[in-house]
Amino acid sequence: MSRYPAPNPPASPPHRWTAVGWDAPLATYFAMCFDEPNTGSDEEYDVEVFWIGADPQEITTVDDLVTALREHQVELPADLIEKLLADKDLEGDRRAGRPGTRIIAASVEAGA
Image (cartoon, rainbow, N blue to C red; front, side, top):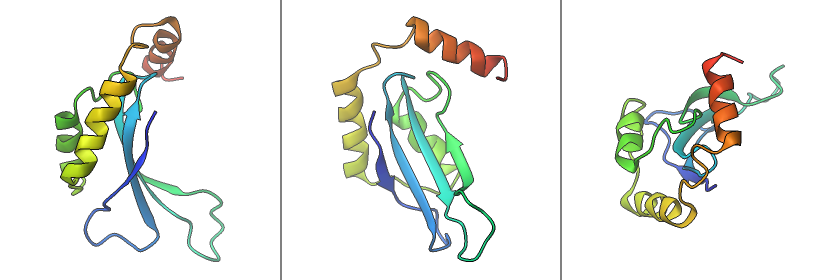
C-alpha cells in the first residue's frame, strides 16, 4: 500500500491535508482529505472532507482517480501520477478476489 501527500483543493484552510495512494489488498486507488481539529476545539480527531476508494476495486485506474478528484477540485501533478502507476505495477492487485477481500466487500455491501 502506498500513500502520498497530494495538493489540496483551492482555497483550502491551512490545516487541511490530502493524500492519495494504491491499496493492493482492496485493489483500488484511494484519496482522502481531512481537516485537523482547530486549536482549542473539542474535536479529538481529524474531520473528513472526502474519502474515495475505500471499497474493494472502487477505483481501478489512475484515470478514474484523476476524474474523481476533479469533482473535489484536486489536480494531481504528473510525477505523482507516475508514482501511483508504478505502485500498482509493483504491488499489483493479486489480492483481488481472495477470501479476505471478499469478506471486506461483503461487509461493505451489507452496510457493516
